[in-house]
Amino acid sequence: MKKTRNIYKMYAAWEFEKEIQDLEAQSRKGWQLVKGGLFCCKFSFDDSVEYRYALDFNQNIADPARYRETFAEQGWEYLNSTINGWHYFRKVYDPSAPEEEYQIYTDTASQKEMAGRWRRLACTLGMVELVCGIVTLGMNFFRPAIYSICLALGSVLLGLLLIFSAGWIGQSNRRRSPGRMLIPVLALFAAALIFGGFRMGGFHTRTEYIVPDEDSAWQYQFAVKLPDIYTLDVHVDAPAGVRIVMVKEFSGEESSVATYGMLPQYYTAEGTQIEQTVHMLLTPGTYSIYTRYLPGAEPGLTGQFEYKLD
Image 1 (cartoon, helix red, strand yellow):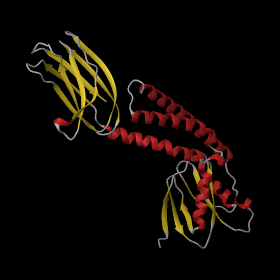
Image 2: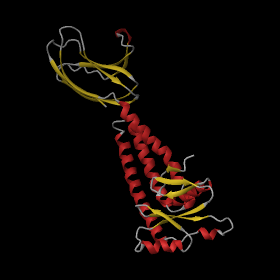
Image 3: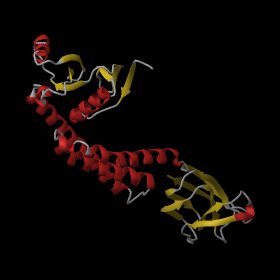
Image 4: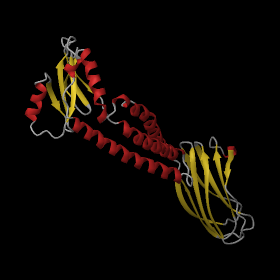
């Protein structure tokens, strides 16, 4: 059996009581803390003793030697300090001793100052997330997308969580609530980011299309990887009326082409200028956009066509 091991775990600044409880639970199992840290704690195995632990927050120690001596006079053994001002102590546990023996002197003013800083930071970040989420939701009224809506909702929920949980910082009876509530919010963020990263399917293309001598259409083909609400921007400057159709192909067979959605048709005989934005829920597959001049257009006329999907 290994005699040492590392445990990787992160605690919020105001969850020091929870960290103490976890350290004491490890001690009862025979794993005694050797060195505490921000993200990793080192333990050694010794089941012949049980310790009680204490954490003190103090970033302004004028005399470190005297500071440690003060705790030593109360029977506390100093272990180590972290770079952000937390100090780890332990004392051998005696079941016959009163609980008061394991209550340490702490710099209460420093702890209150620390809690205040985290409350202000949580409120500030909460307001930023809330505003970003509301702005993103507003943008989705014009260019909706499922992954973007998820990000916006995640920002709003995270902002509200940070604002409301700011008042809980430093209150041990509520210290676990923000952590539990944060899990679904972060899951929503992660899902939206992954979904957006693999969404694909967007393109931007420009072309000139000349009225043909025979009945044919200019075609642009693209693939959609994930289902979502896509926005198609159409810009056309043509000398005659045009018809634009989007279709979804199945199995790559020309005979298995089904019309997925049809964009508006324009019948203006000359000087046709089209600027159209269409929102469509597209499922995974291969799509084609067909551009065709309406019957009666004189062969050889050139039109400018631009399509953008995102």
